[in-house]
Image (tube, rainbow, N blue to C red; front, side):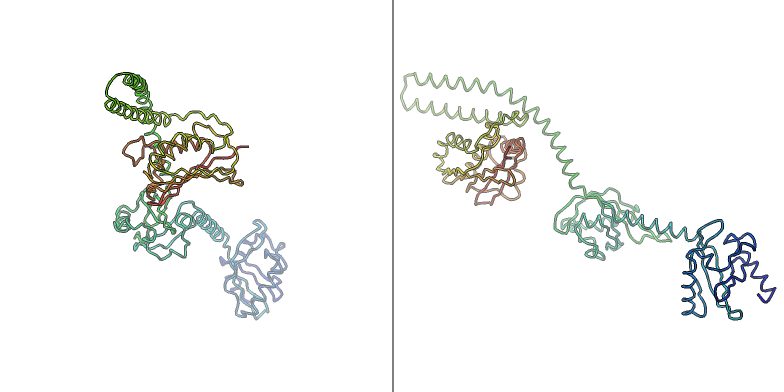
Length: 479
């Protein structure tokens, strides 16, 4: 340094200053430079500047190359240096060529705190980004004009749209038609603007594939630095399955109450019914022995048969209610399912002939399966009776089977050419107490479903209105 006055200024400045020759040999360090680098006395001053640099001589060579491209000097360059006390300090360096002495003036300040804050901010940003992207719930950003500007991975999973398909689009892309007509999007905006939020709003939304799902939405206002609302964040949770489970629980509780009542009523009715049936038989025998005109006798016996038929019908309903309340424990044996179909055919033969319904039974070659004979018979009988009622008269019932070796299942198919089931009613036919008949318990198909469930099997329905129905009862093949 040529000027003592200039040297004094450099010595007392709050910026670290190092003077080197063109090879990086240190000529001078000011007070602040020694403080930052932890040099306590002149005897411990390094010989070359790269001894202070964290990356050493390699980095010094890189700096020289940068100066060759920028001979006027480097304005700002962040790097790490070695300190005697703190091993890793971040500094912001400015380098000016020092032409008079063929060297360099290096100005630097400690930016470690700033760098640590930046790193912390990056970590926090990354953390928040991961929360946003990895959330199982949909997280959306929505403008005041109801346009989507944020779409996370949870939203992709719930709605089926990729971000590029919805960003910039109106929120109506997710709203079912009946809610669009009610202008739900505008109502939500008004409510959220009024309170600043909208919490646990239950509604429906439409997926890309058209599926309607039940959702829980919470919207929160997003404000700028001056407190003005410029949009909303929305957290959307798919509660479709939760709602279904809730409905099943409610239904289960109701059925439990109904079941207890039904059981009590069925038991109370059964004894009088048995007495009425017995007395009808005795009365029929008495009338057979009484002397009277044959026409009159036939009329009386016909009336008794009608009464007996209705008593049997009531008895069947009470059996249905008792089965609904408590399914009997299964007594499984190896049975060929076609033997059950033959038994049912014999039982219904007269009714089939009277109704002029053809009964075609294909006895395909299938393995015997573990079944409770009585329960399986009841399930098959319920379906065949339903088929007969759907046909009315002059129709056809066709029964065949298939053995699916890979799935280890035997399926019995019962096909009719009756009136068929409307598509919107197919899912309801297994619900308890659902019936389209004038009389009946509405439990037949539900009991059939329960019997299949007890056997670990499945029941499948395909139907076309006006053309007929095919029901498959699929039983697992035991070892």
